[in-house]
Length: 168
Image (tube, rainbow, N blue to C red; front, side):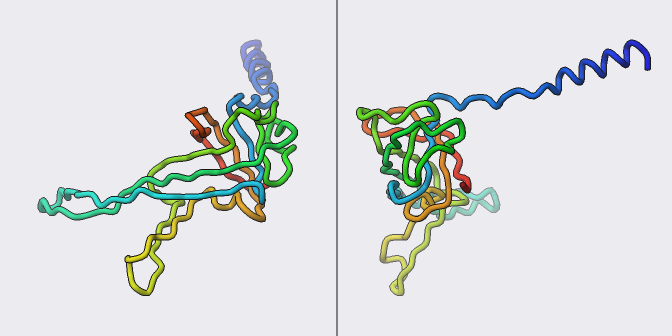
């Protein structure tokens, strides 16, 4: 092995140096699913005019926005780097608890999409409101999931930006 090849091997070995995982951003809130979390969903539905390029035929399509609100119970201890220190049904940031003046209601708004189901369930057809479910539903009641979300304060709620829901 020549000097050049040895240098490349040493350089590659130095690149493999393991680094500790990056700390979560300070705006990342962790929640452990459970009875301390209440999930409510509502929707804003409308039928839109959609134009098809095929023969210029117009049709109607159901469009809408889903709004999910989570009323949460603050933890008495910080969540830890990955939310591992939370009791079921509680929420906290990695290095601090939620303050008493901070909103304890989280809100996510987004389009109806895969992972969100909307179904009319009535013998009378679509005369009754649809039943809405969302990916957040698993956080309420006896739960085996953990949530994290990057939040920002907006009036009386914490708006959820990026988020993940994963098994505990």
